[in-house]
Image (cartoon, rainbow, N blue to C red):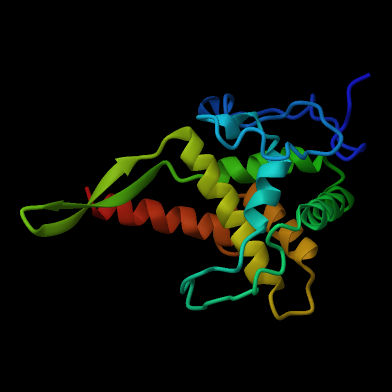
Length: 202
């Protein structure tokens, strides 16, 4: 009998529609997605880490760290290192999504990550003492990282200093990004902003 994520959600029925993501979105059956960092020192090791755990890892941060969307958020490391607590937040968010949509929340998480992943980025190049920006393609691994980071960041900003809990803010962002809502989803807005700046740097 195959294990289900958190004992509730069947990962075998989840489909990855983006061909470039197939090798990096890990949907191996596991009850508690906790790898204990055993992939940390292997090249591309995180591709063997369940997508729910990768989202949890992105939530364990000390806020935005810089001015993002006009605000600086300092969480004073309240979630840093607290893996069990963060896994509970992710489970609660997935439960909320499942209750609202009556769909497999892991499928919506995968859809949200695919929608929020930018296809083009920009970098700064310096030649002869002159710096300028150039557009670059983004690898599938980095695209997934950027998408999960922006989803987690949206949840932190949505739940910070508000009545809404972090789990509720995360559930809201997963639903909005899965719908590809460019008006309300922070992760989708960041994707569009990144791709727009890359186009202007061509």
